[in-house]
Length: 596
View 1: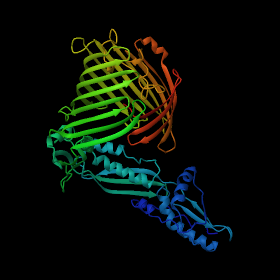
View 2 (view 1 turned 180 degrees about the vertical axis):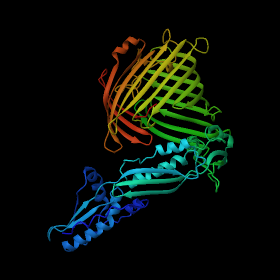
View 3 (view 1 turned 90 degrees about the horizontal axis):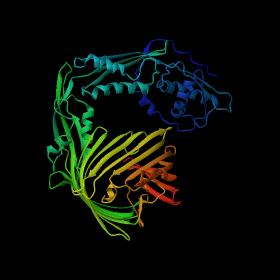
View 4 (view 1 turned 180 degrees about the horizontal axis):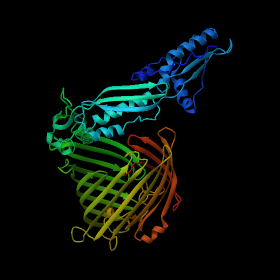
């Protein structure tokens, strides 16, 4: 039996811990199996929970494959004394006692570790040197936000993270040249407490100077200015403002990359002065013209092929053209839209036209449309103002062909307040819109169309999600006669009421289903994601209908079923098998399950 070595005399000492994690990551793994037993004793349940995984993962001494148990015991104890103190110190245990025993010649040795008391933070001292430019209230706020306060266990990882967070709080707002001058962790074994001292040099306060743009070839500086809402000369330096400009440019069709950085001068001092520093923006332009092809399948409109052409520099004016032809089994579409860069208020204007032919639920429609749109994002709310002129030709078997037209102004608001736009777990996405037409002003009927839709997300447990969706619509008019189908309502299919074919819920007219003046849809869905995989299983219930009589909402068509989800880069892909209670049919639905 090798006895515990005497516990070190309680003396006040300093331990430099900045390199402890690096030493940890460099611990070599054993070349041979470590034939020994490791026991923890003397600590509490917290010590067991904290240290057992740490020791199992990182303490792997190299012991000879062939040796006497006494020799193995001595080697084990020597390795433990050499390596365990550094390992245990990362979790705040600075006075461990180690013992190795060889119970018998044919049993592996036993290593007993008494970690001793865990060190907690006793006092924190945060000093600011050469801090004439740093207001006292800002100093107080930084001290208040310190991430490793008194009373917390002293861990090397938390110590490093707290220092990094403190420095980052300075670097990202006003003080781009801040530096960490000194940091010390002084551990007193007598009280098992640590005194933490951090000294920062804030440096001067920075304000933004002129924007220097590098990398423009096809476009001029005025295009950058249209997207720049945050990086303006004379404004206080905020890293978030630089990131906002960078993000805005990267989301445009003009640039494949953008990098924004402040350019401090060398030798800037912190004697209370305010320093103006230029900002450099480096961009890389995308190809101006792109041709794309695609093919796919939709459970609503069938198989499709598509040819598209996009230009980011139409007529050499940085106008964006988006055009294409899409051929589907039930619908054929051609479109061309021109988007102008944002104006001085951040609003973006566009003009476009489309031609659409469809044969769905016994009704053949041919539509031509021209429109202008003005859209603007303000925080989490997007506003769209539009005017659209549409000519529609409708053909139902056994009835004469009708031709309708409508000039329709429309306003739409979209509110997105979710934790993730592509894969939300909590929050809400809602939209409301209103539009109408007046008889005699390029329209065949007076009407006012109102529509609202919302989807809410509720997190359940660690990964599961409950989503609730609702939609209401009403077209206020004496009748549906003279109103184009785009301003009436049909439901059924993916994104509406699953278990029913696309747009099969509406008003019967001859052998066709046409749009009604009222719409109601409700849906509930629960998605269970399997462990940490990208796969999930969903159960859902949908109900809805469209009609000319709101009283018929009491007999909504109900559909329910199960689905499979897969998290793709574009959002969760959904495959659903749904039963329509009203028809007794089973329908298969495909979609990308992202909010509108």
